[in-house]
Image (cartoon, rainbow, N blue to C red; front, side, top):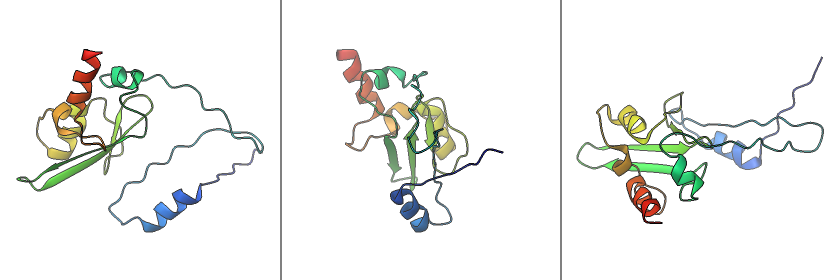
Length: 133
């Protein structure tokens, strides 16, 4: 019978220990053999974010956030390698920024103008930058 061995980076363990009961933590596992780590299979992004990702304007594992002061709500999502968004508190990824935003707000909303990258740019601004290239 095969043996399954899972090794976590110390940073992952520290994050798990510091998590609150409401946090969603996503862990990605890769297959490997022996002592050598496996080479990750190349994942090709698809869907609405694919163009931004292929151009290098949006990277896998990028954290997107938003805050709506009047509604007193905020959201956080992580970009997957295939171009989807994993939203905190939701078990399944969303195929578009607007669907991900709707999951948080409960309203139909333009996710392209709502989600911000860590440098403050909206996805719409990144899309405009791509169109200008």
